[in-house]
Image 1 (cartoon, rainbow, N blue to C red):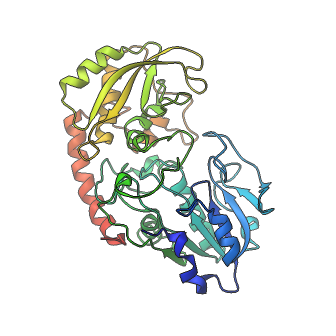
Image 2: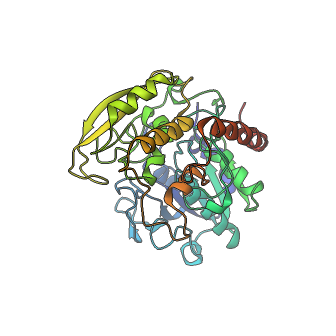
Image 3: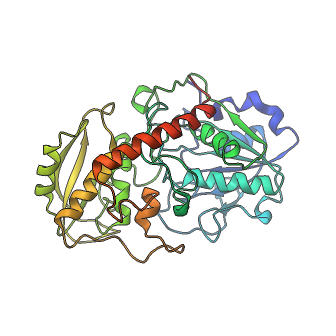
Amino acid sequence: MKLGIELVKNFKDIFKDKKVGLITNHTGLDQNFKSSIDILNEVTDLRALYAPEHGIRGDIQAGQKLDTYIDEKTGLTVFSLYGATKKPTCEMLKDIDVLCFDIQDVGARYYTYIYTMAYSMIAAKENNKEFVVFDRPNPLGGKKIEGNMLDLEYRSFIGYYPMLQRHGLTIGELAKMFNEEYGIGVKLHVVKMEGWRRDQEFDDLDLSYVLPSPNLPTVDSVYNYLATCIFEGTNLSEGRGTTKPFSFIGAPWLKNTLIIEELRKLDIKGVAFREVYFTPTFSKHKDVLCKGIELLIKDKAAYEPVILSMILLKLVRKHHEEFDFIKPYTPNGHPFINLLVGDNFIKEDSLNILEIKEKFNKDQKIFKAIKEKYELYD
């Protein structure tokens, strides 16, 4: 298999006599760990770099804002897309003709990098720049989808377009969908991979796992992210500040053994649950011992993490007066939980699990028809 960035020399015409900018981070590598920055620096006129959340080298923790700085290795200016602005300004783009994107996605709707790409595509269109995406595999594969469609009332930087939590598209396919289905209209080039199939998940590939952000340290954590990221909108720890972020959830008051007993009665496929105890070194419940639950994946093919997220949250809410959704609310007035879910049915407790599953089935049919139009691989 070859990644998009490994095929850049086949697309020299796109870059001929043009000044190039690159949005990337530490995952922008070829299979020999050569940086996309260095690759483009050799074969194009690379003029500027643009950093998303976690920075261009992956050395910034979640939520920390960045300012413009100089990359020590290349001497190029790095413009922050996770500070005062999340969308490149006219000033940031004035010295380039083509804006490129090469970042590993994780296949989840609320992962911010895909909206860094979307906002940048919009900016490129507004400033008459071309846009290039170097494609990479979806680590969750390209077949399975799960979740509910985002209601645009809850649009945010963790959910900007109507799509499912588990979307089953590559970053290049997402770019095509954003561009055509949702009307961005930029001049887009997707540099496809060679040798990737839709049914391949990360474990099927001969690729080294480079953690896409500091709190997704393992392949299993990428799957569990779809089950536990919802707890970012609550007063439970989602495991940040531990050795297993997104595979642990907990709180000082959590009745973890009771919740595990109830989960086991439900015979949930593909995942097991273990009681754990942890003390986060940062983030929620810093320096306080938490009673927790660990998610242990047994069968990725059978695992449905998005519906598990709904089950987990409902069980925790049912058994704990201490449970709450985090405040303050977001600038648009919506609780953070609604932005994560893309709807208000969890916050309002208006649907039971059977009704949520019915909503998932309906929304998955709608999204499947959309996504198939933009699939680049068999």
